[in-house]
Length: 219
Image 1: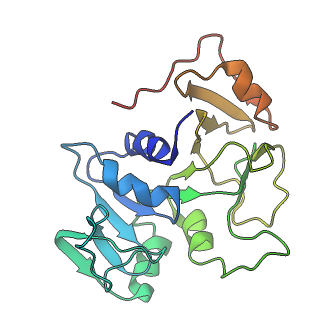
Image 2: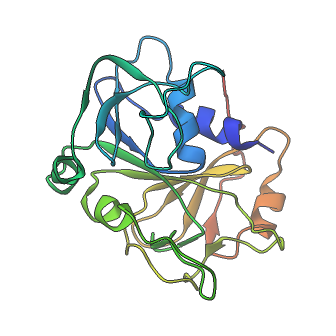
């Protein structure tokens, strides 16, 4: 199985040269550390930054430079800082090529729930609703099962929805999956050492898999 850094490293391989990419809080923020060499991308943070770099080394943090998850970050040459109104103007006018988000649940129709668990304290939806409604492409970085071992890839989401029919691809500690236009998860790659049968058992939603599913390459 992959750890959180492994998930981020695999997602970084989906980023294309010239992309403008928004990174959500949680696992997606780690993607900034794994942008492949030779790929020129501009990372956007919804609190008002273009040109976000990797996390700073210990002792080099600047408390005034944070991402949407309030983590200290670095900026790259040519970066730009602005207010959240301009940031969401970029998002809503579809200037962002790819959004990478965390999720609590994803349905086989591409619905996403990633902001609220009933009965627990919630800080708010943040920019997630705008991102899933406006992004040209969305990849979810998430754990395949919850702490109780229950699948988070479901026929229908049980938690309050953030967006409907908007997720295209999911990367978990077990697999890379596409969400099919007609519904269902298509198994594209499996984590090293993880069998297709194990992924089937961990997926409650409809899963389609070929007989020979390749292992992920993280190099």
